[in-house]
Image (cartoon, rainbow, N blue to C red; front, side, top):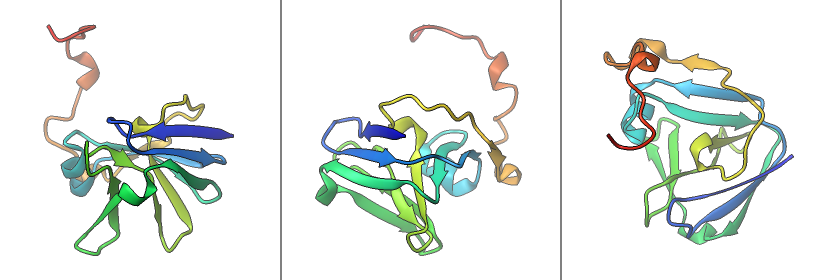
Amino acid sequence: MKHQGSCLCGNIRYEIEGEFEDFFLCHCKSCRKDTGSAHAANLFSSTATLKWLQGENEVKEYNHQNLGHIKAFCPNCSSALPSIQMDGSLVLVPAGSLDTDIEISPTGHIYLDDKATWDHDLDLAPKYQELP
């Protein structure tokens, strides 16, 4: 299986070849802070390969306090990008950075003890096709 993705500005493009084993919605404080949202949505693979198609030398990485919370991103538009983690044994792909559809549904929510206080019953909020 091959998937392609890119950053928002299009300066960086990549390809993932292989299967995703897990798809977690992470509510930890670090993921909430670096996404600015209720949770991060990340795909995980121990067997897939990451190939940069464009802009590899531009990709920046931030390892929060050297504790292993690694975020790869585009320095131009700040979009989250894939990273190789756990000493090369794991490919982590921000689901929203993909340009191709995936078959896997979220495996589950993790780090719920850190969940935002406002993150409940979000599916009950009014829905609009555009900014109202």
